[in-house]
Length: 100
Image (cartoon, rainbow, N blue to C red):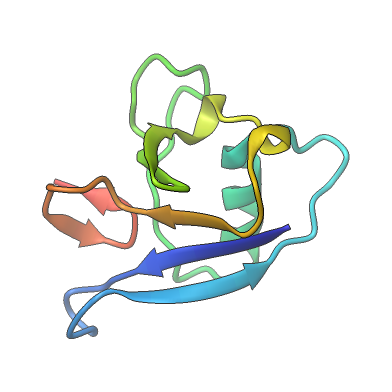
């Protein structure tokens, strides 16, 4: 699966930039959060929040293909490739997909 993630580390980067990943999914990967965990396995500098994995806490909220949603309840089968992921709009970015 092709995933484009807007990355940003205020300590290193002047502005956000897009980084593309070609993620090899496992059969058990059903939700976008599973794919993001695979990205984290590939690139340990990538930062995002995750907590309950049930859509209750909202910690993994992000902009997914232009719409705000939760990675833990977004089915991979419902997404068109490349999946473009950005931090929630209008909020200060702490790092990558983590907002304040």
